[in-house]
Image (cartoon, rainbow, N blue to C red):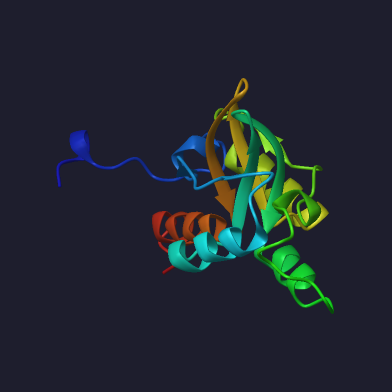
Length: 144
């Protein structure tokens, strides 16, 4: 491929928008956990942004959903997503550098970063996306 049209090499200063999963699946806070679990299984995903009236109010991880579902006398069809979600969400803008997001996720053990453009849910950056970015960086550096 000629250098003039070569794909740019990934770099830690590149914006997270270049690495995120755009338009992620989401769920309403009043929806049952059983529906969330079905969406996660069907989509092969582990994190669902939780919305209320189109606004982000939390994040539901597969681990949190499974924990609640395994409690005695809990019917996932009767428990709302808001009972298992966390409202403490790591938010970043699409322009936040990859290195900054990866550092924060590692330091705080976040499973994902929710990418917001103002109040609009733009994407999600998960540990799987981070691994893909790492692969791209190592290939660009000639390490793989």
